Length: 146
Image 1: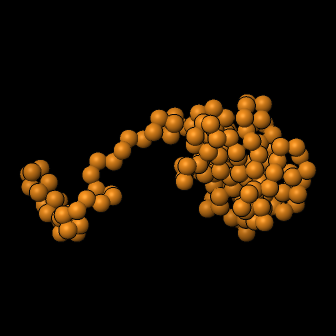
Image 2: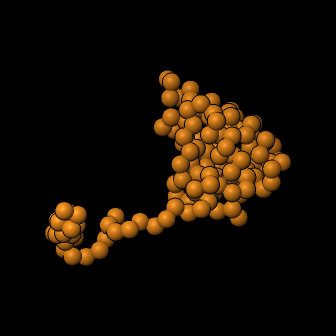
């Protein structure tokens, strides 16, 4: 019976694809070790902490960890351990306050939309990042409630 299902599946795939291979068929690749372990370096600590916050969903997207409050993306951190630029989406007032701090800079493309960048190099940088992430999360949660 398993052979019949396999043959039926193959014939259906051949009809759809014209016999060519295309993405989505066949064996998928294995999950990268970094993804399976929830990140490495500062990303692991951020993921552990943010994962405990209510309403936060963490998902890998476009080479970054995406942090969501409901449906709203409020921050991104790189998957690669050598990249350390954390992007945070803040309210205009919080963005102005954050940009007064040393080491915080406007996002290179989305500064007008309220995004900032800060580098999280070591464990000592994480508490400062968490302070701004908390504000972004609260702003994202209140937007979803409205």
